Amino acid sequence: MKAAVYQNPYEIKIEEVPKPEVKAGRVLVHFKTGSICGTDMHFYRGDWRWMKRGRIIGHDACGIRDDTGERVVMVPVVNCGHCYFCLRGLPTYCIHGKFYGLTRDGFFVESKALPSRALISVPDNISDEEAAVVEPVALALRVLNHLQPNLGDWVTVVGQGGIGLLMTQIALLKGCRVIAVDIEDYCLELSKKYGADIVINAKTEDVSKTIRKLTKYGSDFVIEAAGIKETVEQTPFLVRKSGKVVLVGESKGYLNLEDADEAQFFTMYISAIEYPFAVELISRRLVDVRGLITHRFGLEQIETAFKTIDDPLNRTLKVIINR
Ligand SMILES: [Zn+2]
Ligand SMILES: [Zn+2]
Image (cartoon, rainbow, N blue to C red; front, top):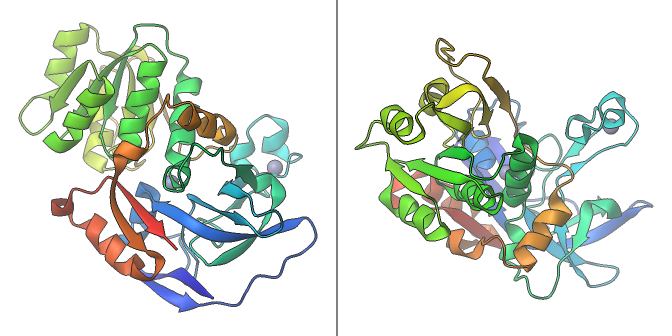
């Protein structure tokens, strides 16, 4: 059977791999639809060296259960429930955790055997494509749940790609005032469509000055979702004193904390437990993922898919991979 395999930076190929062995407690799932995310692009560009050669990629996908024929979302993080971190309510950092598509073989393969608790059934009103864009919704939920904003708090979301636009949507659901920042007008148009209070094009406006003027003291919360060093380094100048900054796109960079007294900075990349809530939000039409889908490719065209995303001229947001 065929799988999308990471070989080297800028080299992801379709290869023949053996069919999975279905051990006790596991369910065979046939891949239907997946999507590519910013993490995959970091691997593709060789930014994160811990991606191993020969690893099957893909961590956001839906498929069909072989035993029941049911449609399911595949959850990439499975925790053990009894290690140091699990016992402290931090399943994301499970020592024995499986991170499919990251530290274990992922979902972009014709069939995969998975523990049944890594599968969430998909309600009928969610399309296959929507069921393939759940991971960023779960992450956005985790981030905003963690920040616990009050009604009307300022949330600045730097980067309005797929993940940033979901942060914008969920921050608005939480009753926040959202400042959406990007360098592409087509992204900011979507931010406006989803209800962002303010949009800033960082190419033409001074982001820090505009935010100070609007908020007086700085943004209560800042979410870095652009995934580049420069925007990480900008965050201390956007947050108010004692505010919070979440880095979801990239963690490298120099933080000058001169004016960011008592502000808290932390990273957050993956969500282990918000998946069922994410599926529910999509099903109830509270969060829109359909409007984020810009391109579609077959699994066999995986190389073209990555090349397309890598070129900013193609204006990709969420790119779908179909079987
Ligand atoms: Zn991802
Ligand atoms: Zn654990």
